[in-house]
Image (cartoon, rainbow over the protein chains, first blue to last red):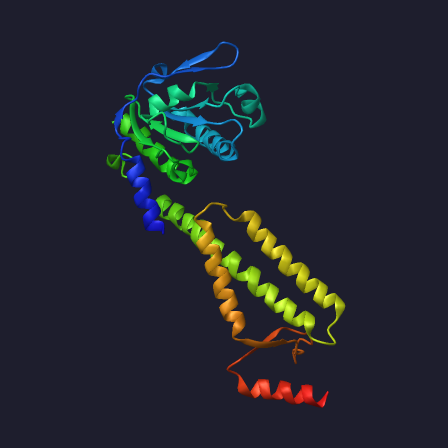
Length: 167
Length: 135
C-alpha cells in the first residue's frame, strides 16, 4: 500500500521539476506592503503557500519560525503567501507570533509559480526552497509533501544551501 | 521533490520515514487492535460473577479512554481504513482463542491481575469447569 501511494505520488509529481529558476512572484502584505521574490536574491528563501485556516499550515509556520531563528543571521529568509479568499495575513501573523513576512496572493499565481495545472488539487502547505542564485532546489509534490514540513529535514537542506552559497 | 545534488542528510530522512511509518501504518493497526482487545477483555471480566464493581468500572473506563485517545491521535484518511480494520481483525482472531480471563491474586504483591486462559490450555479449562460445576 505504501509502495502504491509512493508510485502515485511520483506519477502526480512528475510534471514539477527541480532544479529550475524561480519565477517572479509578488506577495501583497498588510498595509499595502509587498514582497517581491526577486528582491530576496542572494539569500536562501523558504517560500510557503498556505491557507490561514489550515491546521497543518499553522503547525508548519511555527516550525518555519524556528528555522528562521536558527538561520536568519546566515542569510536565510522565510516568506509565506496565503492563497485563501479573504485571507487575513495580519491576524495569522499575530496569532502565531511570526516574525517573517506573510502576505496574500491569488491561487492562480501560486499554481503558476509552482508549475501545477489549474485544475489539479493541491495539498497545503506547498513548500519551496530557493537557493541564493534564485533556483528552486526543493518543492512539495502537488498533493503535499510532509517531508518538506519536517523541521529536521528542512534544517539539513537549509544547511546545505547556505554552505553551497558560501563556496 | 528535492534536488538530488543537494544530497539531503541521511539521519533526518531516516527519522522522518520512521515517524511516518509509525503514525501512518503502525499506529492505526495498534489502535484497531487494542480497541477490540481491551473491550473483549473487560467485557469478559465484567460478565464474570463476583467481580468488584469498582474494578469493572475502572477497566471499562481505562479501555474506552485508551481507544478514544487512539482515535483522536490517528491520522484520519482513506488509507487508514484497511490498516485499522487489520488491527480489529487481528484482535478478534486473538480473542477467539481466549477461553476466559481470570483475576488471580499475585502471591507476592497481593494484587489481582488479569490472567488469560487460552483454548489450548486444557488443564486450566478443566479446572475452571470443575470449579463451575461445584458452585
